Image (cartoon, rainbow, N blue to C red; front, side, top):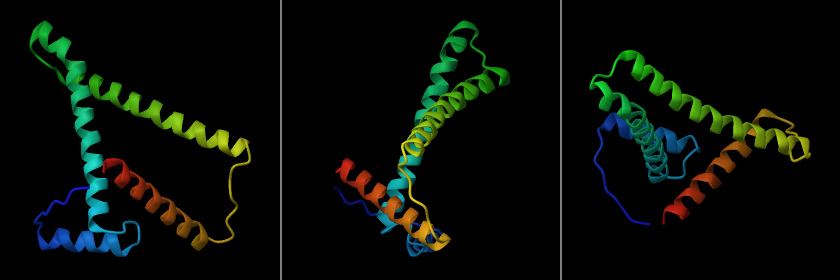
Length: 128
């Protein structure tokens, strides 16, 4: 893994510190990695939008609001299919009895935070 130093305004530093203090992120680096993953996905969505619009642009050179709305609808549909697939995985796990019953909200929240930390650490290892 490589190191990158960044300068941010005090207001954003306070935000980063609060996110780390919440326990969701171990470090500011974990938060920035997560934000960069989100930004990367956003850029992928923009590239998909451009792919959907390219044939229209070649045909008449002008993109209308309707064309743009249709492109974003296709992207949302793609993401919705991905979400539905993930939800079905969860439903299948429930059907197989792969679940845990929590006895308090605090127990559930602690487990969610622990799983989020594991996921972030896994992502970090995969990027290294």
